Length: 111
Ligand SMILES: [Zn+2]
Ligand SMILES: [Zn+2]
Image 1 (cartoon, rainbow, N blue to C red):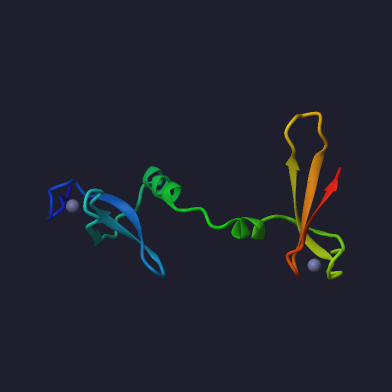
Image 2 (cartoon, rainbow, N blue to C red):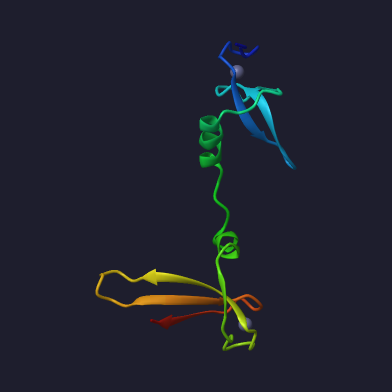
């Protein structure tokens, strides 16, 4: 067990994200002090830190969406990301959205 030299808080093994990489470190939750370690981060702690991680912009999310072959009404590109959205009320039809992989044009289609 190790303690923070600044305030005596018990150091915990954490994933510390530096500018280009993330390292395992013994870190103080109080003042942010950390020291590199070779200890592996336990699953639960890893989850904890990744949940703090700010979720990227919506654009980032869209990049992980499935694509389909459909013609973009704007640029005639034939691949688009798609996702489904149910507008409020279960009796309303599900709306399918498409976003052109090429020009980013987004349009909808009722199922
Ligand atoms: Zn500290
Ligand atoms: Zn397009």
